[in-house]
Image 1 (cartoon, rainbow, N blue to C red):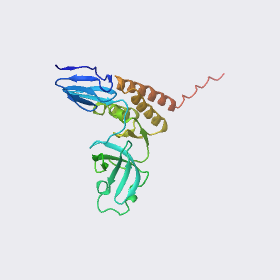
Image 2: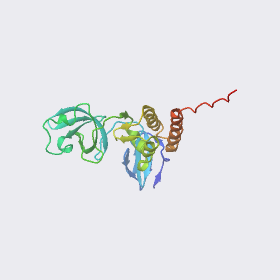
Image 3: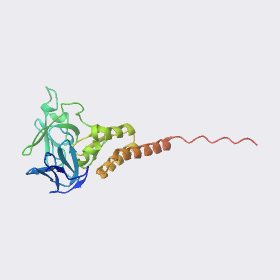
Length: 244
């Protein structure tokens, strides 16, 4: 017997039967004798014949290839220790960040407190993740601000093929980097636009389980950017009264 026992983006709980037969367990699910169950509280997704549950809440667990945003918390020898959130501290070796030859004092390049975008090169639960900065767009992040969101909501913030984040960037004319660890770097032209960007990301985070979210965020941004333009527009000069 084969079947699917959930609706698209249905909220499910641990142990709930989701499918059986020709379907395959994926992230957030497990298989017992050909039956697939949810392993956590989350939203269901079906991709091909793979059943997935996206957690509504959760901590960041690194995966190879993930883009992350981290803060340097220590410099030791040829390594930087990086806080990327969650239960694991990351390690960035100078060979994976700098071109040789480089100065022995690597704090000249990145020091405690610096914020970096990096990629997870490898991950071992015993020693923690190893990072690299040898890739396109991987760099020290200056200016802007870091917004922290629930890592489980990052796929919704990015959207399918980048649809959500690209729409926000275009509407607000901002620059962003979205880390899979739930940190978003935002650079905006002014404080009002920055506040609007934060509002948009919080809206997505709070309503990630709902449908047509991209349309609602887009409508909100159109309305609010129009209001900001009106506020910046200088008042029309008063008409001169006719002389008596």
